[in-house]
Length: 112
Image 1 (cartoon, rainbow, N blue to C red):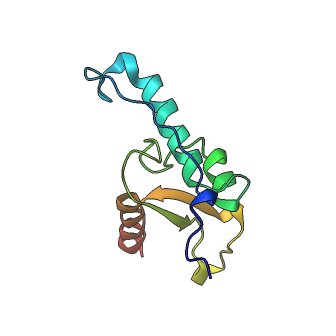
Image 2 (image 1 turned 135 degrees about the horizontal axis):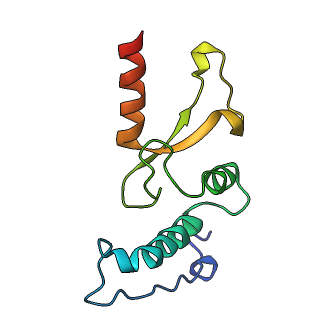
């Protein structure tokens, strides 16, 4: 019996960040976006429903507009709630940051 086969572990190369680089530097914004997108691609299985959803959103949270992989937790939001007849189809789902998800649902409760 094999508990864990180390040979099946994929090798992931990491690019070092230069000591003076900051994600707040406007000149490096594009570089950081590419880095976050690459990180996101490594976390989602290529071709999966979640991967397709992130690509359709251009790797952005639809609520705040920030990159999905900026260090915050990510949740899946139903655009039309299941209790209101929404489905689990990709067209009815979106990736959002956890705090943005709470914000969306707290606003819908205020409207009701």
